[in-house]
Amino acid sequence: MPLVRIDIKRNTDASYARKLGKVVYDSMKAAINVPDQDNFGIMEQLPPASSRRLSPNALVFDEQEHFSWQKATW
Image (cartoon, rainbow, N blue to C red; front, side):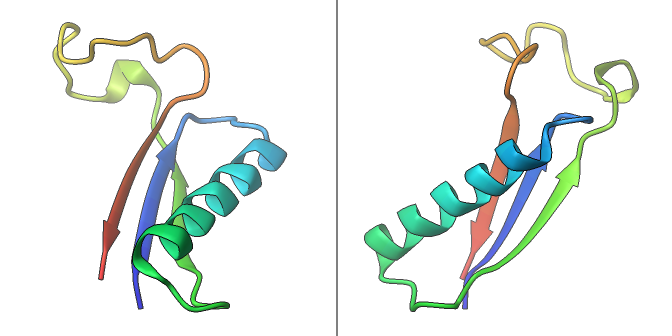
């Protein structure tokens, strides 16, 4: 039973969050043969960038649009 944690930007549209969760689940089904209905996850909104402790040069992409961190364990 894999558990997925997805951190998304605060105020992300709910439909986008659902689509992201589905894409991650479908990808795991295809890649590691996760059974049907074995869909466990935590989706949480990140705090504003100003309250995170990241070096401004730590990320090599722009997080202004759709931004997420994903972590899976099984």
